[in-house]
Image (cartoon, rainbow, N blue to C red; front, side):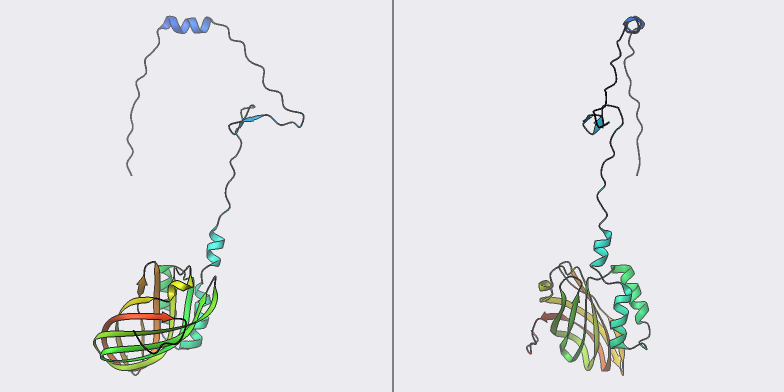
Length: 227
């Protein structure tokens, strides 16, 4: 940021005018007297005694905002319950995501399974934990297409950001991911629709390799049609 300095030229009054001003006698006005309760009258936020009043400062709202989000400790417990304490790198992954994205205001814990041979299908179910609206059951399906083959299943933790109304979750979220399960696997991906961001973290078992694009559709009830 740069600042520019400038000088302002003012006209200098003649000496005679200054002497004329000094020769005039001014009568000082007496200071105002306080009221019966000892206070001075106030005009434009400044009392007549010349001491300005101190403006009021609005209280901070950061504590309220923190109550609407989940901290790292709130997420590690549920994650260990579905992934187990032996999931290597999970704690570090959560820490890195929170540093980049901040704290989520919701998360989903559940299970899912799927398979593909160029065309893929995915089915899942779990529970949405929301800081404001509480816990709700949630289901999801998703078709995909791409050079992808195999099958896998396992547990899923989905971090949910900017979900102010849980009704906004029950939509289609575009998805793209690379998958590599050879006996077991561990991966994370990003899905966004509008301001809502979902980060699914999956630990599963199976035999699947490839990449695909598609979407995940969330619903309040179980659906068998993936579209």
